[in-house]
Length: 164
Image 1 (spheres, rainbow, N blue to C red):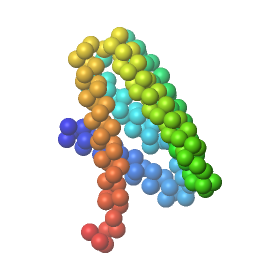
Image 2: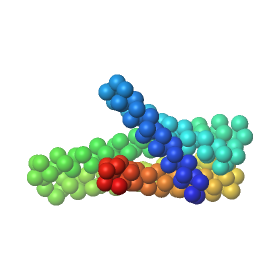
Image 3: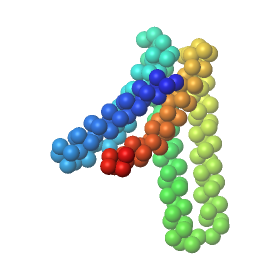
Image 4: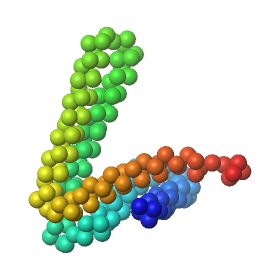
C-alpha cells in the first residue's frame, strides 16, 4: 500500500510541478482536466498491472470501465446542479416543500449512482475472474482513498518555506 501511495504521490506532485512550471512560463492557466487525465492514465496502467489482464480482456474491461466512468461523471454533474439549486432556494427564502423536492432529487441521484455501481460490477463479472474482481474493488477503494489523502495534504505541502 505504501508503494502505491508513494507512486501516486510522486505522480501527483510531478503533475503539480509541471503545471506550476507551465503557468510560470507563460502566465496562462493550463488546460483544465489535464492533470486529471494523467492521473486517470496512471490509474489505468496500475489496473492493468494489478489485474494482469491479457489484451482481449483488457479491451473488454476498459470498454465497460470507460462507459461506467462517463455515466458516473454525468450523474455527479447532475448532483452538483441539484446542490447548486439549494443556493438559489436560500436566496429566495423558499419553503420546506421546495427543499423537500431537492432532497428527493438528490436521493434519486444517490440511488442511480448505487444502481449504476451494482450494474457495473455485474458487467465486470463477465470479464474478470472473482479474484480479479475482488482485487479491482480493493484497488479502486485504495486508489480513491489515497487520492483524497493527497488532495487533503496539499495545503500542508504548500506552506511557506520560511515557516518550516
